[in-house]
Length: 369
Ligand code: DAR
Image (cartoon, rainbow, N blue to C red; front, side):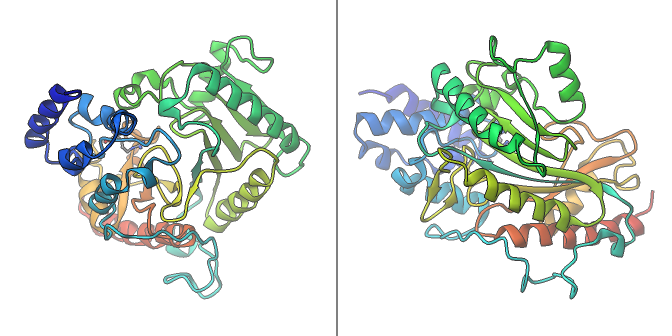
C-alpha cells in the first residue's frame, strides 16, 4: 500500500510531538478515503511537519484550493491553531469605525500611550489564483509569476504615491541586482533572506529554485514594498517610523486596492476562509501588523522569554528585530504583533496592536529590572 511507511512514521512522530498541529490533525481514516492524486497532494502539504517534527504548525497549503479540497484536515488544523470552531467562517473588513477599543477620534496614536516614534509595519500575504502556491511551483512557474508582476510594477512606477523600482534576484533578469546590492537590501530590512536557510520552507518546497523568481519592489520613499516569491507569491507591506498606526494601515489599504485592480492580478480567495496563504497561520487576512519597541526591563536577561510569557496572554507575538527566528535587539528592542490572523478583521488586528502595546508598555513600566 503506498504511504504505508509514511503512515507508520506519522503515527510515531504524532506520539512524540504533541505540539505539531498538522501531525495531531492528521487522520489516517480520512487519508484512506482520498484517491491517489488527493493523497499525493495532502502528503505534500504535510511534508514540512514530517521532516521537521519540532514544527508548531507543521503544514503548508500547496495549491490555492487545498484548504477547501482537504477541509476535513485543515478544519482541524485551523481550529487547533486559531482556537476557533471547525466550521469557522472568516470575514475580511478594513473599516475601523465601530471596532472595539478604537479611540473616539479614530486615531491609533501611540504617542497618546506615552510612546515615541517607533518602526511601524503592516503586511499582507497574497497569492495569484492561477498559479500553484509556492510549495508546488516549478522554476518556470516562479519566473512566469515574476514576469507577470514586473508588468504590474510598470503601472505602479507610474503612480507618484507608489513609484519606485523592482529588484530581481533571477539570473539574467533585466532588473537583476548584484550580491552586494541584495545584501544591502537585506541589511536595510527591505529584502527577505535566502530561504534555503529555513528547514521548514525547504521541506515544504517553498524555498525551491532559489533565487529564481525572487525579488522585491521598493517605492522611492522605501515605505511601500512588495516581496515576490517568498513564503507567499506576494508580501505587500507599508512601513514608516512614527506614532500613528492609521498611516501605514490606510496606505496599505489603498495600495492593495491599486495592486488588486491591475489586470492579471486575481488573488486566491476561499468563500469559507478568506485570503488564501501558504501557511495556515496566515490564512484569512494574511496580515501581520507590528511595532519595534524597546523593552529593556522585560529583556534584562538578554532573551525574549519573559517578554513572550507576558505578551502571549495579551494575544501578542514577540519576534527579533530581523523577523521570525532572529535575536532581539541589543537595547532590548523586539518586534511585537497580534498573533491572530484568522477570524479577525484587518481593522481589528491593527486596533489589537494598539491595545496590546498599551498593556505591554504598562507591564514594562511596572516591571523590576
Ligand atoms: N516553523 C513553521 C512556521 C509556522 C509559522 N510561521 C510562518 N508561516 N512563517 C511551523 O510550522 O512551526
